[in-house]
Amino acid sequence: MDLKSTVDMSVRLSEKLVLRNPVMTASGTFGYGLEFEDYVNLHRLGAIVVKGISLQPRSGNPPPRIVETAGGMLNAIGLENVGVEKFITEKLPSLRGFGTPIVVNILGDSLDDYASLAKKLNNIEGISAIEVNISCPNVKQGGVAFGTDPVMVREVTAAVKENAGQPVIIKLSPNVTDITVTARAAEEAGADAISLINTLIGMAIDHRTRKPRLANVIGGLSGPAIKPVALRMVWLVARTVKIPVIGIGGIMSATDALEYLIAGASAVQIGTANFVNPDTTERVVEGISSYLQEAGCHSVSEIIGSLQLP
Image (cartoon, rainbow, N blue to C red; front, top):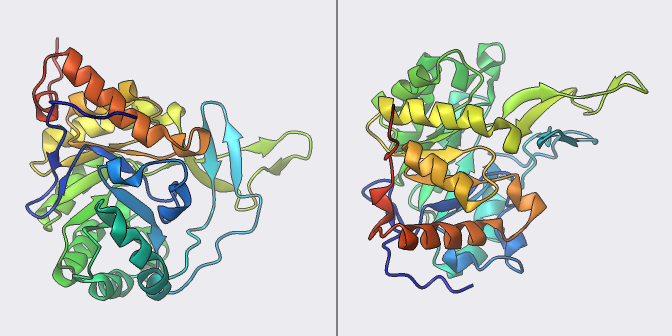
């Protein structure tokens, strides 16, 4: 694909993190990045966000753990990953050569887990930023998800910021009453940027067997079905905080991505679409560029937050 353009597609997510364009991958949908090398020119993406990394390797949940739904999919993978040590020694070296910012998504069961992960990844060559999955349960607080309690959001954000030399992105859970409250908590604790939304909680039942279609019973809903919900939340948060917002949820095309940018997102992440068409990310980059040229824009920044209200 020819992406040559006179339009400046670059976006700044922090003082240290500038992307060549606003299109990122979403954690958990793009593996460690290398799996898509045969389908996407990884040099052309704004950033690669790898699947969630924990302190120790995780085998994930038993199957079935992915189910198609109307307009999307449910997943209960269980955050399967190789663990931080193997990621650093076995996965990261190959990713460094692409010249594309690598964002490492981290997850933990306690505040200490997040702090330890940030410390292990601190200023390691090839890691441009850390994205924090706060939808995980805090085992020391009775299993309450970090992302549903503003106090815990502040604590985990502060712990990661204290131990990380890279910019910190907090990935917000939509499973709250008011997402602007947790967004403000993350900003006040020093987050450099916010990404949203993580998956909505859902389930599916096989009426013939009268059993859940996921072995875990419940899972995370993603795909086009959640886009209107995610778009609303991105718009609300972008109006609430001063730090950059990254939009996630049901982006299948450049048109979808443009809606998020117009709503106030500085960048977007593409997830479920990668399972449908592995080259979606690259096609979205090209589509945004074409739109901006046709609209006579000199920079993508001209449309960010340009929503015209009645």
